[in-house]
Length: 446
Image (cartoon, rainbow, N blue to C red; front, side):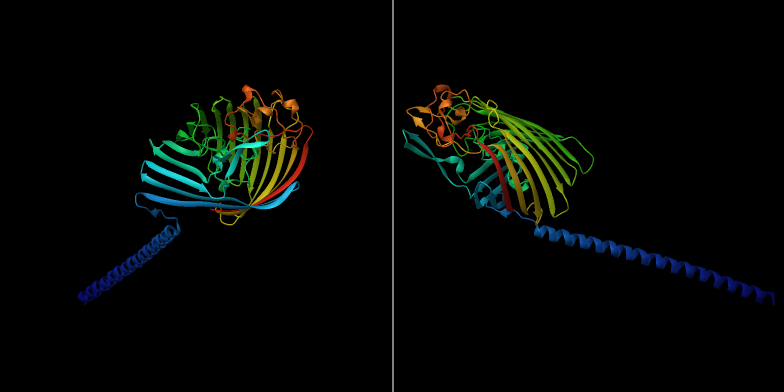
């Protein structure tokens, strides 16, 4: 009887231990199932990410295979419509840029850009009311950039060719990235190259540029500071240009840029002075952008200055509003000749900066400083210099009566310009004030 009891107890213990083992095995199986489910989920996420990256690479611009190296094609198209209270309304094909860039070796790259909307102009010389010579204005050529760059190190590069000179934050910026339809006065064709123009000009030369943490710079020697685009030099003088930018470290989402730039050179056969000096500031914290530039220009005996203050606010991914105040004094020696412009605009982004629509109404007040002087007149070997003519102490200026009077005095040697085909000036008729409303609409696509 006792033996039977022990046998039953032994069998009961065996059943209990087996049940515990089975329960433990079931728990382990459930844990394995959960681990397998997690692995399957992670594998699916990896596959989805790889598929997304593959699709993005397929949509991204790809280099075009070339006979040697790689070539990348880019472009910019801009169409304008402008309405003016004192001029005819007009539709304008502003830009149609085609750019090509490539890599010869990891250290040697090249770039060229053409603007097919450029219209060739003519430089004429007259004597006694008769045209004595006509030449093509090379600056109106479709060729804009053509340069080769050599990377001396990851931070340093040497550029040789024709490209934008290192002047003005706004002038160096691509037209597709401007917050406004047009640049500030001192960076536009409204001012002659030798009549205060500062940035957004091209010339032939060589520059050394560097980009280090917090600091960027460019310094170079050019045939001139802009007047020699698409043209060879006619003298031994060269212009020295430079720009220095500091970008301090700020909290995430904020950027600050402080810069100085300048140019110096007596780069004509007559060694006429053409110097520039400017300062720039840019701050961005995401939706808000604040920009400021102030410049001074010396052309022969004329000193001019000006600047702008710009504020932009990004409402969302689609809309941005912008306001800009700017002023320009074409001659410090002339009283009450300063122009002031007030701009308030909006930008609708169709696809980021690659496709956008901009509307910029603006008001101009002050003196009429944007009317170009009539053609340069040459009698014998003496050439009228419109830059010098703007100076109140220039000989013969008192004989110049109004915008309609084209009978210019012939200036003696100190104000004579041999390269008259490159001269442009600003007319400052006494007593002519201006109140002008302008609206510009621009459609851009890159």
